[in-house]
Length: 231
Image 1: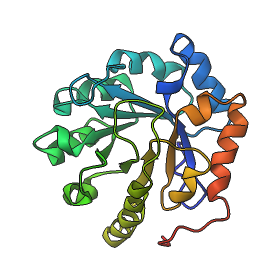
Image 2: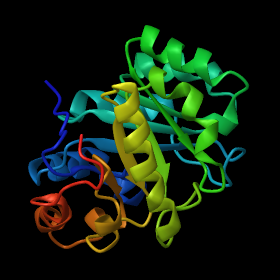
Image 3: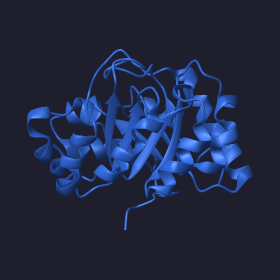
């Protein structure tokens, strides 16, 4: 069974955007052996964000070789046209942007109906109020601490405050949804995200000489720490 990680320190989801694309199976197995919890897959369409990455066929290829859940972040317009493909390909989590569709609730419900876990996210400039009506529908809330589209960007400190606000609201709802943070994560910036459950880390893991040491350093940030809003 996949680990949920609540109250056990950060879970780490290395982002394949920073991996060696010529050796993805090797990279996935290496970070799994090094202690990662999920694999984060950035899906970009060149329209919603100014970059192109991978689609459902790549996820389908990764599924048989990944010992970890595949966490697919859809940075694409009209995700309702594609969620069935990603669910069929084996995505465990499918996260959509609230700005990318006219009916987020319907898309989230469809993701769950298809057997995947629905997640919702928003650009840094989008207020949290935009996703509040949909929190009861999700298993994952992704906080972007960079503008979506490219790896290697600097962490936006002001965005970390969204984690505490989300934790308070999820607790009010009695929700078990996880909070994930993506963008500029390293052992220093992770200290700003103690209310989160999952850290997406690209360069901090895949550009490190020792994947295990990098993952342990990230997990250690929350070990022994308490979120500002106890669960």
